[in-house]
Image (tube, rainbow over all chains, first blue to last red; front, side, top):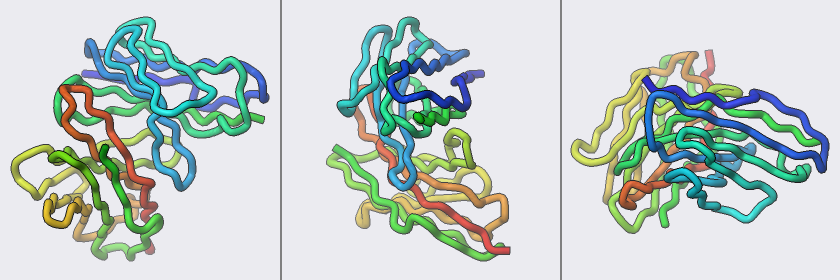
Length: 113
Length: 115
């Protein structure tokens, strides 16, 4: 069966520090991968998605970047965190194909102080 | 582009009462529709989905939703609420895009169950 791992679960970082959140998927190959950010009352905002190694699409301009160095690994990064980067970050994957649902990791609660 | 509107950011129902969470969508092509549930500090779990075929879709935990094209709606219902149903619920839509569909989520509805 497929599983998705996302870590860490919580993170407190000072303003201006770098960020690296990692997500890995097991039990499938060539998945679509996604990073979402969740803010209270605003639902889930799609930040990045990837349909293959090295293929990253950004949905919104921001202080973050994403990379996919391996088929089942997706990394969210920042060189210098801002206070506004605080939030709940969720990684997800889906099969490639029509009408497929996304499967979510447990999320990372990031607080920038 | 597609979008989703969830009416009511907070809904409270008594234990044993009907649960109705509203979702309306906008899509230029026949959409795929989803309901997810999220418990505090956790990821999202799929409740049910509509792709094609039968418009009444049954999901986990006794939930169901009906796709109504004429009303562009996909409301979530459960006949009898249970305390364990307290959570946040998200409606989502995607549109066919050669295997590169992206889910667009609504802003969520927090369901509270009154004992």
